[in-house]
Amino acid sequence: MAGSARILVAEDEKRLNGMVRDYLESLGYDVVQAFDGVEAMKLFHREKPDMALVDVMMPLMDGIDVTRRIREISTIPLIILTAKAEEQDKLLGLDTGADDYMTKPFSMKELAARIRAQLRRVNMAGEESGEEALKVEYGGIILDSSSRRVEVDGRRVNLTSLQFDLLKGMMLSPGRVYTRMDILNLVQNDLYDGYERTVDVHIKNLRKIIEIDPKHPRYLQTVWGVGYKLELLEGGE
Image (tube, rainbow, N blue to C red; front, top):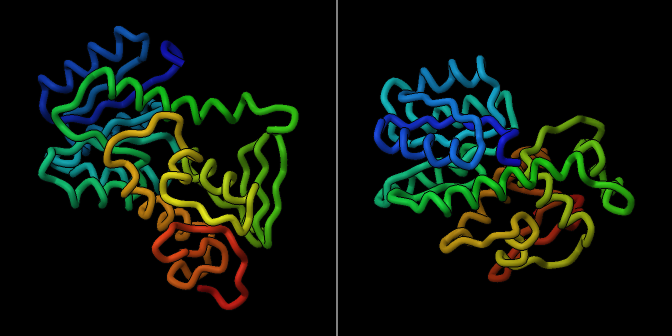
């Protein structure tokens, strides 16, 4: 994937922005730099990146608003960058639609690994064939792996690659109870310290998209003290 992906790096700390740019360019990525939120959105529309790294604390428009605006129009992979003390910002960023987060200071090698994991998931759309290119139906949900298309009760819904993989995995085994670690194994190959607690946010985001009433889900049920399962309930949870 390196060499074929354009990555938007939105970070107001110029030294860190430059370090990330230099490292990613050394791996063959095409990097577009932004130093505030307004510039990030302008470059997003103009350059059409394949992925975005977005710092939470930026002038003019913060990273949470940038993430929210990107998610209104795009499902590209997005990783938020936060300072260690900004725990709530991490969860807020994920709740807004980010796929992952990195805590500063971070290892460039770990950043590259997370970028590869996100882009690898996107590439699966063009690589699935044979048994993997299947159409799964459950209740009113139709999921087509070959086109990465999802319909719920006849309406097309747009999912990020992470959300698509999460829903697909659970649709293949409806009724099965998944622990949070099971869900992590569904959506990524590389597990990172602290990532397990973000599963609840990703489930919440998926519910917002596929459920009529996310607070009383028909499909994604909570199994208290254990995890989650996909099970159709007529009256909700």
